[in-house]
Length: 494
Image 1 (tube, rainbow, N blue to C red):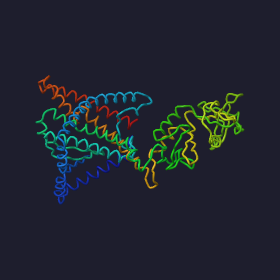
Image 2 (cartoon, rainbow, N blue to C red):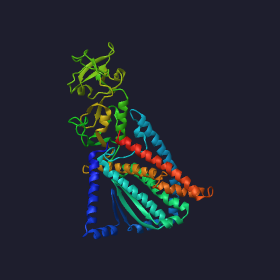
Image 3 (cartoon, rainbow, N blue to C red):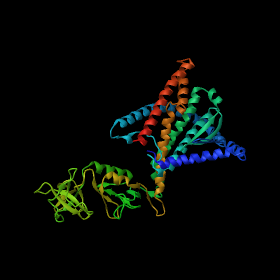
Image 4 (cartoon, rainbow, N blue to C red):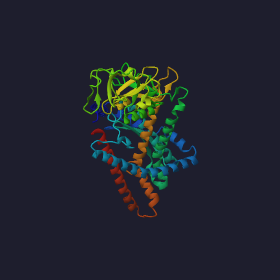
């Protein structure tokens, strides 16, 4: 469910704005000055909606529209082709997403939601509050670039630009351009298509630029940060298994999880996935060090069928299983840190027969799905984690970038990286949503212009072409509405 605090803040904020607007309009002394100020500055207020429109950027749009006519013709023609392909591709993608959502709804335990390309995002529910700034700034930047494409394309096709503006609807920011409709109706369908497709084309190119910056970020940051040495800890969840005196701390550089080398954040995730999907790692221990505790032979079964041989109150001892030449399965309760300190990993006793000193492979006997994971973060002592690997994975935040100088903050590359990821995700989502043939979105005008450009000679009657377009728009609108409605239900109600 949506957190009550988020709803209260949003509703309280809008009620305050609406109340202030009502009071100012009802006051005879300030009403005229207030309405005059709103009108002169281009502000329009309505419930849950604030809009600002201005003409101060018209000259900038005009300069951009006349920079290089030949290049701009090729640029927007490529955008037109992309827009038409995106219009059909968005229908396929939304249909696939809808089928995936329906299959998850019918399943008792929904899985595979991470495989969906599109997901409904609700701040405070499946979007962390700590990342709201990235989310809203990325939406605003994507919207401005989208409308910038429309404005420049329109001026290039000799359509007058009345103004540019931004708005806030509930909590979502956006932008818009005001075009002279009469000029827009006088140009050819192909010219219209260039204008209508320019928005999604610029969003797509914004994705390409953000992705390129993301991949080249290590090069840009090379004079100040280095990568490839490990995963740097930038946050540890307080009270989690990864915190504590023998846990991880800010600034620690994780280099290894068991025998899996960690060169970066992706390796950290891959190593944890590998350890969680494979049997528990064993450790080579010299037989001279192996002394059976008094609990040997007193092992008992847990409820899940695994064996335990230590007391429940032990914080330093762990039950290990091993085999020798005489008995196939033995158990011993041993001090875990002393037992596995500086020992090699193994799967069987054969893996330990590399030294002249006889050794056995001891495997921790843990509850099902839990693991003992040795985390190396030199020069500190190894952290020994016992629990579910996913708890280790999500209780620590890491970065690939290690500062070369002490005064450099490790969060700077993380902020740039996170913002680029939001730009790619949200700008890409705008491509899909605006390209789908749907009423009141770019897809409506793209489809109308496309049908006029392609079917005029085949279907001479304009009414027939409009009827075909209406049914396409009806289907696209229903498809988008179904995705949004079911996506919201999956996020907030499940």
